[in-house]
Image 1: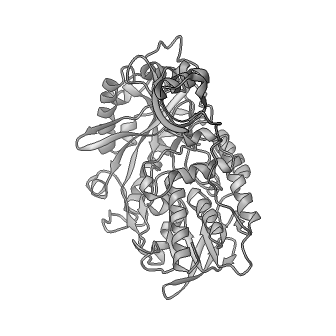
Image 2: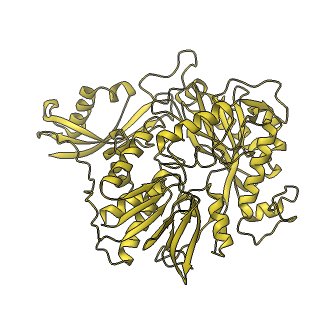
Image 3: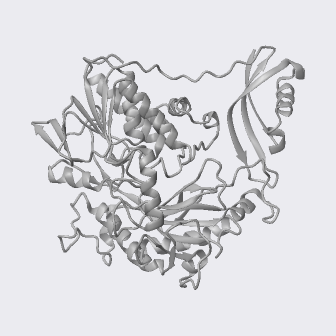
Length: 538
């Protein structure tokens, strides 16, 4: 028989299959030799006390041979020549998973991606990091795989109501991810492994009859009533299709301008703004695992992570996209604007731990920040009815950060305690950020609304995590691309834009997702809705 059971073990016990089988036998009150094997269904770490424990949920095989778990992946068939066509604009997780879903439904996807494929994209990132020269179409945000490909590949989501999370994870495994993402509490692929997985997805789409076109930036479209009949790209090419999925990501400002110029409804949307903070990983390990820094954590434990939140003046200050064993990277998409993000390789074996530390910003907050120039360049005042209000605010902060760094994407930074106590740092610690750091007063980069809350938040986090509030840590500006500052509305039932019958806003760029998995699920959801509305049998 098979039995699902849960228990706690010490790390060394959880790593020993014989010990796990002994525990299974004890819990199931059977002889040890009756336990023929087990499958891990869920694994997490309990570090609340000094004695670290591993929480395990397993499927135990009692007096029967273990059966390898079969990953449930739909078959991908070749698209018929008579199939309907859907244009998918953007080859990030929303666009890729929408395309894969369309193929399963017998619809031909035509992916239009402004950037390059994953291999070519890597070269542009190297130039950005080493020479401070940015390619506006190929960077950490734009290109095959989207923003997640070279910024970590975290697969944790709370958006289970939006779709089947396990189905997304199984598809990742099918295309080359390690099977442990199926049972880890916070699954993670790693920036070094994601490109190969993305390439495998592309090959599957093409082999089934789909199309992928790189270096194709959407610049316009033709309408007939409430139908888009054709789209145009920057190189003069034109594409027509039955339906169009718009999955361009949270940083495609030109798309927001395009929609506004075409008088297509878009809306200002709240987002979170702040900094990226980096500590020595050994310090975070010692805090979270209650170990001495000189001896380090047990080799059976992964680099420690954390999640922090604190209410300050009725606003949450919270950690975002925490990267143990990670690296801070330049996530800018245009010259003269500085954005930082974080990522980790699959082994998470770098000596630093970084995390975004941000504060939610509402439209009313921006309107109240009278000292901050947030108007559009061609205007001399803030327009509270402008749907690009939050985008302009985001952009102005990024420009401040670039200027404070002195150019070439060198980032303004302060030691953590210096920042919180209002002192300019006389020097800065070693940091993973390749372009380099410039000691700056971050209170002159960030709006006072943000900096005051961050300062108090860091002090409170130091009380929750003894040792966290330390000048060994460095605060780097600015973390500003946490989500899209614009929402592209869609009909609640049909998922199409309320003005355009065949345009389907999708993923992070439309304001309906917040990470790889939620964006992938949204892509699948939109693809299924297209099939339903166009009469394709699900």
